[in-house]
Length: 89
Ligand SMILES: [Ca+2]
Image 1 (spheres, protein in one colour):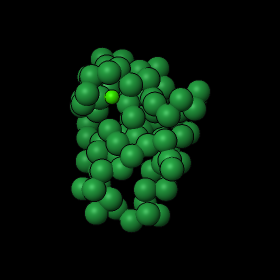
Image 2 (cartoon, helix red, strand yellow):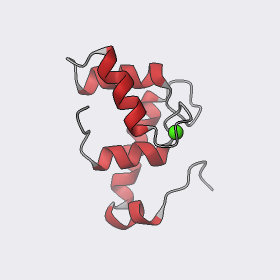
Image 3 (cartoon, rainbow, N blue to C red):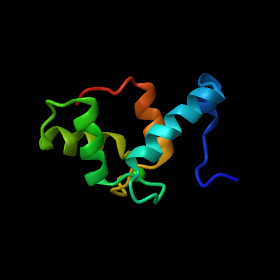
């Protein structure tokens, strides 16, 4: 049983291969392997995806992805964001 739970709507439009690939990205940025991405980890991620992004962008983006506002991005939240093609904030 994985530590994360995928909801049905996500699973229906992504293949297992795609989910595995996204999970690899998630794990890469989850430096402390907590299963969650915090604001510092997210800022590093954004710098890779969008080198011009400001720390303001990072904070806004983080808040957008962190839908339950617990100040951590879990894999479901990351997947939702990934499916939106890295929406620019
Ligand atoms: Ca969250």
